[in-house]
Amino acid sequence: MNGKVVREYIGGGELARIVSEGDATRRALRKVERQQERTELERLEALAAPVGELCEVTMILTRAHLLAGGYHEHKGEWRRERRA
Image 1 (cartoon, helix red, strand yellow):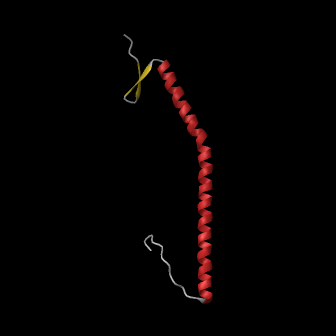
Image 2 (tube, rainbow, N blue to C red):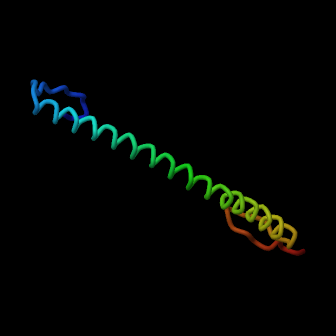
Image 3 (tube, rainbow, N blue to C red):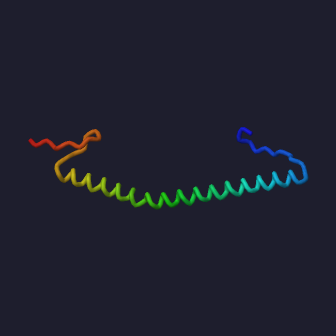
């Protein structure tokens, strides 16, 4: 209730056992789902890591190429150096 843990007394007997088993099943299912989500996230991070590295190398090479070509960065834009 509103994010708080609440215990509800069900009583005894067959109904209480069935409800208890249902609760245990739902908890186990949520645990499995969380583990699957963590595994999927780890897999996606492993796939994305090389792409991030490639982007970083590409940016470095692009910057080096522009600097070697006579450009400079001005307020986030690349401009050709003025020749006197």
